[in-house]
Length: 481
Ligand code: BGC
Image 1 (cartoon, rainbow, N blue to C red):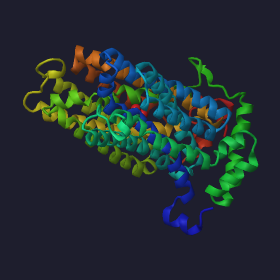
Image 2 (cartoon, protein in one colour):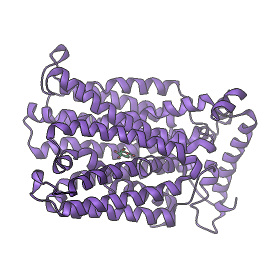
Image 3 (tube, protein in one colour):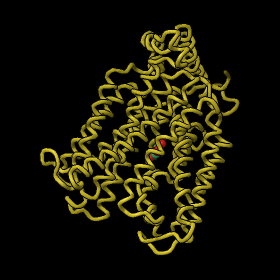
């Protein structure tokens, strides 16, 4: 139980910060495991004599695993709890780290990557659900943004660990400790955060909201008592029980189905937020940066340093979102981010429309190189301070508790499929027309502005039980609060 002094000095009980940080370890693995392949891919390709197509498949397949894992996470977490889902995630991460590290050939490697994808998908759902459910409403945005801070730190750590291993071994394909090649160590390194995640899962308490839903009020009371002032515990439990009663009155049976094209409006909102977050093309910057930087005049050998710099920027700008999200609210940040992304992507489309050369050998004449460079960075900053963290914040807080994990699972699965579609289509689209590709991402950024403007209500400062009434169509019994 937080002392009064702790509450005054930090504003947030320390125990809650610890639980949120521990919950966010899943985000670190999400970032680490989705980026670690970057440093290993060329050596892997050489060792198993893979064609371009098979290599692309081995890399992208994890994203489909992520989609399946997100979907599965929702079911496991709503039925058995958030903590059992975390434990399953940790196990999948560990098995995948060892499997990919000791892979015999490409087919078992693909299988282990799929297993790792399942873990990433699970983690992508559990962290936002768990953090939202244990956070006091006044700081929920900040604590839920820790997930993105962990994702971006995970991306950075993977790039760094890849670079350190490759440099120490004299190349990713060279033998390293115990005669095992450096690229294998890159995957094996992921076992360390996987074990940490497993340990965390065994020490965290179950989400009190999940416990109330399962009728375990006494257990929920104990958890609430350890994270909120005693006088709030009764109110929390009463609010959750009221929400359950209202659902029953409204005939809601805990299904995702509804009257808006077969799903509840709020489920669609989550899916669309997720898909737009990917359709602005953020991962193109992360996965295919070399071509971009070469076009702007950098050498191939600089590209790793630039990727590391981009990933550090990505971490730092998350702090901006953390500082602002509970002060100015979700909507202004998302709207400003959409404008920044649309303008910077538009500038990139313009810059690349004056490119000379084709394929990997394009160059940008005159001032267009610096314009593209600045625009790409403005884009990363705009995304990282807004849509990156805030989509996860919103996914954690807009869904009613009775369907939270499943709805989040579906929305996150849609996000992974969208990520897969963008990742796979970029090389083909870029070969067709790079300016049009960026223009398309710019259009999606513009669409994201209007979507937030007209369809996303402000959830800042509300309890989860209040937030869940925002998306209920007018006139419905569930809204009568
Ligand atoms: C997205 C990832 C992306 C990352 C980049 C996350 O919010 O879900 O797809 O790679 O941000 O920072």
